Image (cartoon, rainbow, N blue to C red; front, side, top):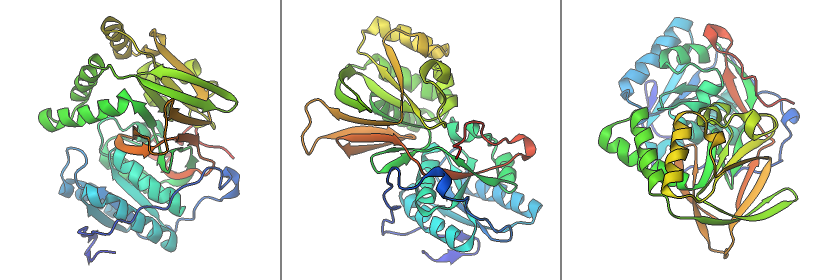
Amino acid sequence: MASTRSSAICCGMTDRCQPRPISAGSHQRDALPPPSIDPEATLLFVINAAAGAFDLEAKRAVIQSALAAHGRKGELLSCRPADLAQVAGEAAKMAVARDTAVIAVGGDGSLNTVAQAAHAAGCAMGVIPYGTFNYFARTHGIATEPAAAARQVLQARPVPVQVGAINERIFLVNASLGIYPELLQDREAYKARFGRSRWVAFVAAGATLLRAQRRLRLHIETGSAVRDVQTLTLFVGNNRLQLQQFGAEPEDTIAGTPGDGSMAALMLRPIGTLSMLKLMLHGAMGRLGEAAGVESFEFKHMVVKPTLCTDHTELVVAFDGEVARMRAPIDIRVLEKPLYLLQSTAEGGTADAHKVTA
């Protein structure tokens, strides 16, 4: 690890320490007991110093106040975004060795990085959200106000929750191909220019959708079903709340819910500008599921590749707000091994009703 300074680790590290690759079906959900947590052990807080509108000192103050109020010990590991994977990986290994948990402090992208490490190491993970939408935290009954979330996590127990995988990366909320990754890139550009807010995110989304022209020609395999499609985007949801806000209620899109062993996929057929405006209106009204040109289906495992695919074909994909290039075919699946999330029944926090069950 990098040198330690009082309660914080300085993150000027250069070696990349990525969590080990995941494998589908390597562990059955009922084969692993919840990770043990020693209430006297020091909790490890991984802080993305660049996430959200709060500065680093404000984040540290929130955590330290909660720790003092509950008589708990914590180690604050703050770092730059470029070092987050390394710090999270080292923290997860320490958490296993010390019978403690790693706590992610940041937005959905930061949570994804910490979850990748916690899932690989097998330790419990807590959340203090600082993102724009905070879908993962809200879905699992975690307060979106950081001070309240910090108090909750100190009274929590590990509960298994479903995670998905896209090739070698896990995702908590969603994964996608096509226009949605473009939308995320445009959103970051708008945020850099106009600031972080939900209105900025919505305006960026509208601008991206109105100029959407590029069609994906995909070969999709889900179980015994095989087909070729043309679509502007393929969106996979593992989060009930986000699907509800889209107006694509789980009961409308899948038999069951994300978290019950399956995920929801939405495809947007190529449409003209007028139809796109109508679709945006449906989305703004929370009625995307009623819009023409939107197809949805349930799946547990899906393999996707361009209809004209070579050994070197790469696709731009997004997962939990992060954008990357991945080599085809793209393998998207529900993982048998859950993530153990710290959830509390205190202060209004509730264990997720749609958690993975053994």
